[in-house]
Length: 89
Image (cartoon, rainbow, N blue to C red; front, side, top):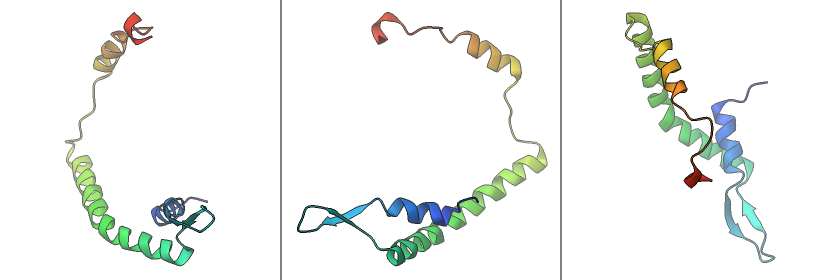
């Protein structure tokens, strides 16, 4: 089962303490409040995501998506040292 963006936002909000009770334990938001907040967040995020997806689809269709040549990647990886310099240890 895949988790939707809505589910991930609601789950992330479950870990946010909003206050502490009289015993010093963290109090978190209830499920209904988390779902309402996730819905509100998605209403703001969704148009931007759709715009980005449309932009990516346009780039793919007209062939303007850039891909690094394999030689560039190989040469760049060859310049990465095998060990950290002494001053990073």
